[in-house]
Length: 601
Image 1 (cartoon, rainbow, N blue to C red):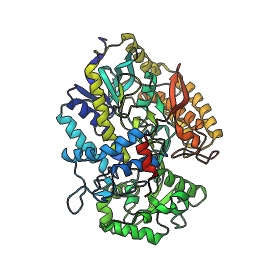
Image 2 (cartoon, one colour):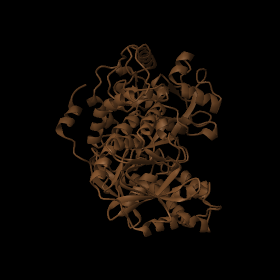
Image 3 (cartoon, one colour):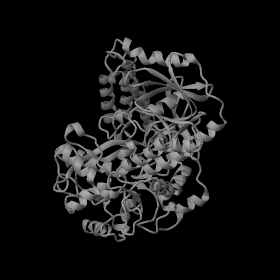
Image 4 (cartoon, rainbow, N blue to C red):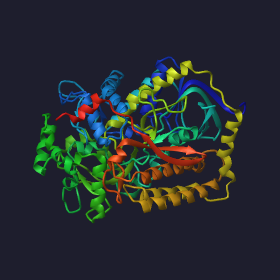
């Protein structure tokens, strides 16, 4: 080990978004020597994309809101495939975690009497999202960063963890490299917390930036972890579609929460057509009722929730509606739909949606106070991920914990907007506490030197490769996943995708990288492709296994929901280096929680 830079801690958190920061803060507060390792810069996290707000039943605006209603909304949004205990803890603890952020200095928008203001969002019964204009995630990251820095947590930025190292069954180390110069570095710890986010860069059109390559899920698989429900990929209904250079950049749901109207190229407000029949009573029956609801909401009055706009349906439903309108020839010139908020007073739009105003003005030369935006579905969020115990964040591999988007459970088949930020801080705190408790009773970390040497050899292998460059492989992967395993899926397409993935894996075996390890993004991508190819296969095999349509998973050949699939999660494991899919029974919900779904509204 003398040839590698080495650092040792009690707890190491991989990932520096909201979940990673909150986990590190908790572990450090409990007396553990704690570090964060992140492949980008501190603060450059996808948490900032959660612009619309953080869901918590504070009941500041709608006094009748409570954790039970939030729990039911989350379970219903996830089509009951959620881990009930995670959904329960999330709903119960989110209010205190938000108040904690406020005590730590987060500056939320306020009600006239000075309490945290809350706005409506798709799938939430009440106005539940605490927010800071449309920059809520940024404020959360700022607050957590300040807290973590003042606690003295060590941070290793622009450092990519390539693989976990083990002592028997237990994870005890991580082999990494500095992105700037390619120098190898080894981290030892008694416990590791994964908080690396999702896998959006496997798709062509995505709101995710270069970091989202599925590192955490893939490394956990290699270490022996189970993944659950990887087929549930959320396509956010509103991403930018023009100009091409900004395609996929997120247009926050708060545009619709503040009154944004979706129309097709004929000027028709189309979302009414796509409301599920069993949901139509929960929305306005016509445009005048929707406007009445909006007027009450903007005036600070309690609106009639049976008249809320159909644009506030769940994300999976809105994304499919836009997709269908475009497919049937009613799309905008650049293949999307119009999202219009220009009928509202200019000052209100600029006050409530400052980021969106500047985003469209600077990137698309569109003034959203005067003209509609063009939007379309964009790959956004992974509901599936690493299996974790709800109370502690522990994985089935000793010494490995997880929190945030990298994990499965709380969101089920479809995530409600706003739940991601409360998920981060609720389970970030719990994973940090779980890792700290494990570390305090665990022996010193150790592993074999030859295991580290093996990773080092694999990392530099592309410099001897005789094949093609990684960018060509990545481009073909994105095209395949976008066209064959996208919003709508069919068996024949997914079988083609599996064939293509096997071909891409063969091409990747001889991938060629030129130059040196110094400032070499092609070399970084060559390693990231290992993760993306592995997880893309997991997504596709899970989607093939689920012969129904549920939540974010829509199959043309099985358009109905099948009750048989409501009793288990789809599990992914790595067996002898091969991705294997089977099923894992869903935990049984206790009777006192079942009764919540039987009560009349």
